[in-house]
Image 1: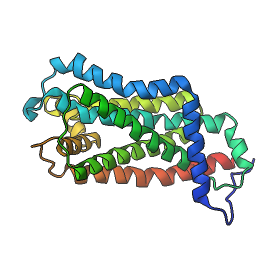
Image 2: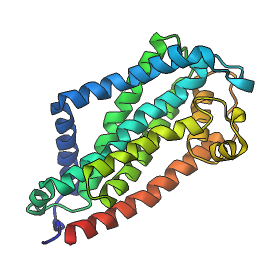
Image 3: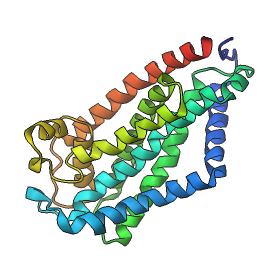
Image 4: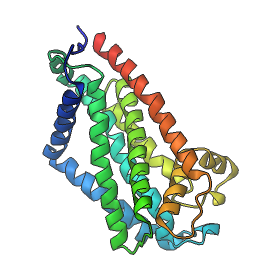
Length: 264
């Protein structure tokens, strides 16, 4: 079986555009999946604000719970959608689509790159829906235009990082069922951070984990950008370093795995 062969003299950007459009169109045709993607951010926001909000203290932050939890829900909504990249890649690898790609003169690395870029576009919209839901529920951000742009950049960077990791996972496993397991990891991480409950209330082991995983500085950065009077400290730099490191490590690994899977 031959590998997807590189296209000599072609325009990779045009091929990447077609693959991104193909992935987005496929999402629009799956009606139940589209409903889930639209409804999930709204449901998550309502559950945390109305079901859990009255019973959880925000500790020394002094914030109302809706202000405390909105950054985590934004990351949760974007991260969950990004995790489904593992499933779409696994479907291409196991469902016969890769055999069709092998007949086309396109660079092999463009296939996972198309999935990742489509995920970023799709899930930034999901984050926007979650934020709109939060505003309807009483969240009142006080960000300047520059801070809004930084919020968008951070959310896009987070979705890019999670989509890149999901691409690696989707290329490692051999079935779509196994690929779906990555979603649970991404959904679990915000719970063991300073996003849903204050990390200061956790046992020592979990508190140490929360302090040294990427979600906590990302949440702190979003709180500082969206709300008045919340200091950022070094969280912005730490969050950017985490996300850049994940992307820088994941994309080359995904390219290597893709070549191995399509050349065997």
